[in-house]
Length: 234
Image 1 (cartoon, one colour):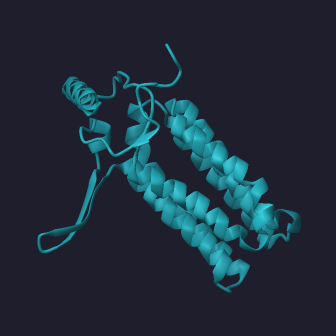
Image 2 (cartoon, helix red, strand yellow):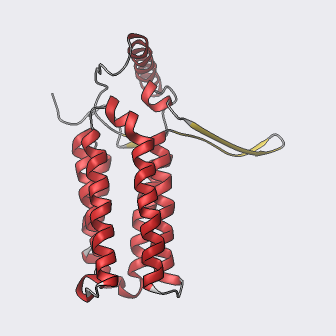
Image 3 (cartoon, helix red, strand yellow):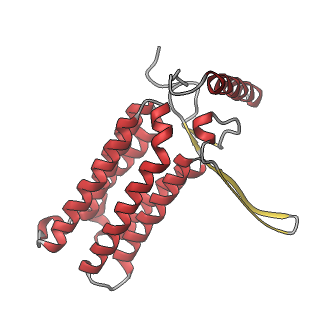
């Protein structure tokens, strides 16, 4: 038995037959003009979390790069948004991580975000100049740790690769020093938006006592439909 699910591609179009934990809080967006569909997408609560953090992250780093406002004001604004984002992440993902028995991943991300927030605010308000010059390195490093932990917890090669992408991007910032905030924002927000739009790999479904017998049977049927669809697509 291999650690990763080799039958799952690293990334692909979103699957149609969702489990109970994915259907919970499912958001469907459909924009159209007349009979012409401009955009259509399904977003689980995990996808919604990625979208939320993608927007927050992009806003933080793009503002730091292009908007000439004080660091103190930015620190207060983005600290508030980061705390709101962390709380929203917990609300959106709690049921899913409990079903998948990976609640520790949620706690790990929350700890990483709070740690980054405290260090960032200290660098600005306490005048930690050395750290202030390396805020991009800090957030790329913290994100890398989060993705690597997620990859191990879900047995996902996709998350491990994204974690390594963040990690190996840190030394590259020296080559784009004038644009390091823009570069960091593109990397972090881009990866989050990619994860929200596509289906990533993870370990095979597990049995969980949190679900009722009917929900377990529903998930079993959905898994069989996914497997049938994968065979047909080959």
